[in-house]
Length: 278
Image (cartoon, rainbow, N blue to C red; front, side, top):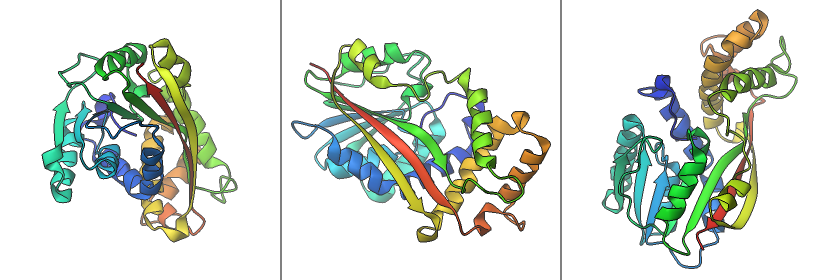
């Protein structure tokens, strides 16, 4: 999850918290994706399109210690957090930060041999145009990695919460209806779009994640942060009983708080497409 265009996200610390928790909990899965990339040589220049707070950027800098990375995002808050983290990790000398809304216009980004876009492509107003721009940006033979959520995270068992079983699925269904108008490419198959933009598809993989909440206390905080954001999109479409049950889960001081549950698990799927510029 990165780069978004909805106005309420800017200055919204809840999204930054969600991105940071996502990076912390799914670090191993991100490492598996960067290790899988079908690269013929180590990249020297990487561009991260819609970098968010830097989960992908830092995984790539760790994986390729001789590479420079250009991180691009529309959100100044995300980039400020990214810079802060880069200094703490002492990789700021290998990082260039560019604030830009790629739907509005493209800054000068050099000629990278790897472009990375994690959970950012579905936010683009005209993704087909963006794919063509990435194609033209890449060095010949360069690789474009598109990572998207195949399935948004789920945390609760199907029979939870006790007073409103199945609540989480109903919340997602309501949020999906709310988002379908302004995020029509969420959940898209990027393979045909990549080949249509002139790329050769070099690999495709789905990474399933299932982590037990009892093994990682951050999963409770991640669930809280994710459900808070879903409430914003789903609230108007939920029944009064469902909304009351959701608010019970989100009330960290209350008896039904999601943080008090011992049956949480993180279940999600990421899909990766690796496409080469011929």
